[in-house]
Length: 412
Image (cartoon, rainbow, N blue to C red; front, side, top):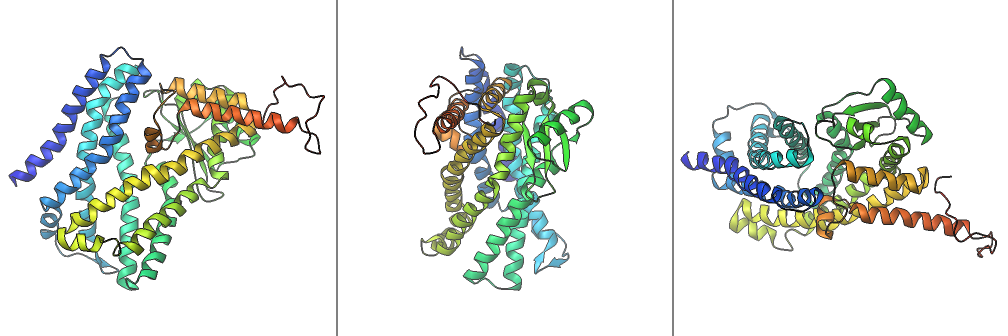
């Protein structure tokens, strides 16, 4: 018991102390605010991946799951799965993972609040971390529970596993936007702001089922989200800070970018990639020796190689796909509302969120977003493409009467 208490305390105190000291050191440098924030974000990206692994490894070594399930009463079973036991495993696992992530957030936030001059309380930041974990935990519970249910009722042959996995991934990706909406603090958008957003959406020929406001003023977060993979059940979420910082053209460009993700079926593309990567893992696990590692090292023989695969998938494969999708959504926005409006919108987002204009490729892949400077250059390339097209006659020849200095506006 002493070892368990010591481990939990280390997870609770260690990240807080380390990140508090690092954040204070970053705050004292002479770099611009955007660069100092970027340094904090980079280290948080790495720690956000490493700390949960440390927590799960400790969970296994200290047998916390076994100790918890051993004291549970027998309860109902569903598809051969003990409901109470499964719930306890999920609660203990994600509860322990939450400890170092909350500790890290609390350690860095005072510096972030000072650099950005925000007013949000630390509790609001903690709620944000817990909301993300809630979304992940529900998705994981559906995935694992669904796979176990299929195995218990149909069997565990390779075709069954692959079919079940594909179905579960599709369901998880279809559900994920609604989970994001569910766990976000939100209120219906009303009054003049609602009329403004409805008008801008209508001009884009997009009529969402609902419009909601996410508080952003206190955290100075300018952001928008379109949730919905099912036609007729799509919702738009915006922060109040975004509404206050953008004029109509800029706001419409940001909305068009989000609609571009839906028009391009980007979420489903990510789902297909997930099925391909982890379906190959399921099919080839024994061939690459994962079964032998599990037999020799137990849970860690499976977990650590799996996390290595996940890192490759999340950064290299999914990151690369998402990177390209952001450029495509920007191009969609530029063609719908005009290049200058799209560029101005990106400039506003960078300024409002104190974002650095440049970042390394690895960071961009890990965050699934290219640097703002690269996105602006890509949008201006859309303008060049449109201008080139407008300078060609019907036979594909350059029109000698065209003005080489003129710039056509995408979206006209």
